[in-house]
Image (cartoon, rainbow, N blue to C red; front, top):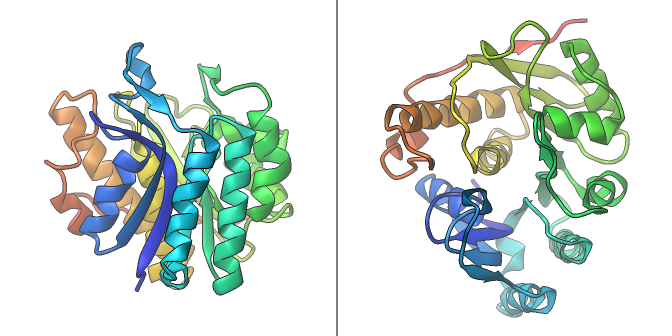
Length: 287
């Protein structure tokens, strides 16, 4: 079982993105989460207006060093990271995972390469996408791109499952052990179905769910966190990890849709973290 997970991400007071999306779900599953906030905002920036501030890199590093001084880093099994406002913050992630791996070589680093989406294009600062592509993925154990991000990281246009698998395996040659494609939209399935695909060197597992017509922030954050948790607890079995992750995330999104909420209803839907309303089975990709 996982003892502790370190999560270096943004934080909001209202709503659920970044650390505000991953801390409670992991705690509900019994994990001791150590959140380090890169920003503290009133709400996510999609609202157009927000209060709060971005923490400077020195402050983020100081919090990590303070945890290190407690002599407890050996208990940490994984590092989570998401949206990065600068390459300097990425360097802090690299320092953190190298420190963790010096104490535990099997430490998992799940890097969510947040940089853009279909229909929106890139929404991060110039240079961040290239930093993910050229630097960050070398250190990642798991990388969790959406369809748009997978195309950028692989340099390939993707419209079929075969093309997605090839892109994921090309990315794996740069370092990651697992590529979790969090939202693969295949040609002809637009607004009907959505696929989540887990790829490692041995196998490819796919879970397909109905499409829910809702736009939410934070779903990628909770997906990456839950997959990391189940990946470790299932001894790196990507099929079981994928099934457990999708079943919970879909159940929570459906509940959010029913509540007509603009934010994930993590508190109202918390029982689904333990016993998801829907249970999806994966199927294996056969060439």
